[in-house]
Length: 284
Ligand SMILES: C[S@@+](CC[C@H](N)C(=O)[O-])C[C@H]1O[C@@H](n2cnc3c(N)ncnc32)[C@H](O)[C@@H]1O
Figure 1: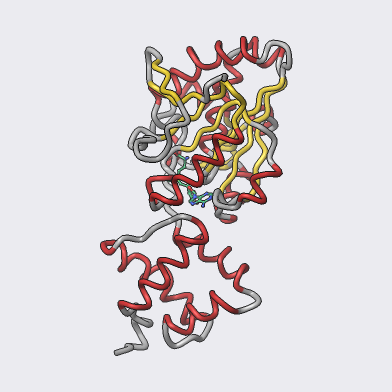
Figure 2 (figure 1 turned 90 degrees about the vertical axis):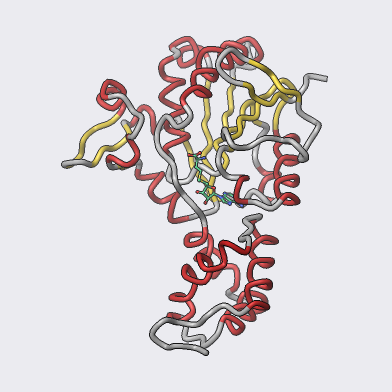
């Protein structure tokens, strides 16, 4: 039964069809326990578009000429965008103290370093990378460093480009770093300083979109942290294969602490640093 005040309910076959559609488009997989979340996040939209049932909405998503625009909306509401500055600090320590020196050596002839934060959400991760880079003066003086932040959610990217954050983003940021790299623009709102923002550029990218991915240049390091945990196994494999192609030989892949390549790929080798272990694309 459909109760107008509560919005449409998601029936078994509709749930199956909707979650498969979403999985095939962007890799995110809603397991049975997340059914209610999906229903709750989309019920309001269905009412807004004046559909009566999820079935009608699914038909629209499959066949309407505006379906791509609707997916842009869907990505904004179904993604989990939790993030903050200096997340997973032991890995960032490995990045600063152990990976960057290797990179300086690896790129000593070319002097161009490209780092990709894939699934950057509202921008805290790529800006963190930029701040760390800034602390390594040799890198800033002698190399051209580009940091690319991409996400599927346009809503997140808008926030990322503005670079304005509140206390929630600063859970693990020291006061010294905050004062050095941010301007307080109003009570409780802090904007990333221009010199850091200049190192980062943002773009919308679905990690399953091979065509768009092929336009990106090769990368020296890819951070893809806390993104693939939401994907089904098959989509994880596709994304990791794409990353392998995009990385230079000797380049690094950094995943979140809850993620690994077990049962996903054997192309990478594991490199153990003092502070963390990361994945390496072998040189030969
Ligand atoms: C939990 S956040 C992680 C943010 C950051 N990497 C971190 O670890 O703090 C996951 C992000 O992945 C993005 N995402 C999910 N599916 C994606 C896809 N198919 N392509 C690109 N980004 C995606 C979401 O929009 C979300 O902002």
